[in-house]
Figure (cartoon, helix red, strand yellow):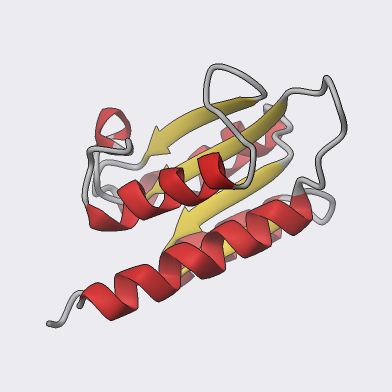
Length: 126
């Protein structure tokens, strides 16, 4: 499980880094979206995957509260909210949308063609 989480964390930050190519003095906004986990748990302390995500962002020069703003969203386990939440997030116009799950990511693809979307698949079977 740790190898998968580590690989996912590295992939996530590599994509985030290229999507957010740093410009001095600029603040970047990432929308971090989960279909189930409450938004207030999508933090560095919210599990191994999220810890790695934030560590890699920091290592790449992005610091939440500094040059990075992370907006957290959750459908809180309600698939009927996916489309509305996708539109809400897209209307906020973040620089990057990081979303967990294929079905959820499909809603974001339908809602925007201009904002980069990072669809993250996590295998929880182990």
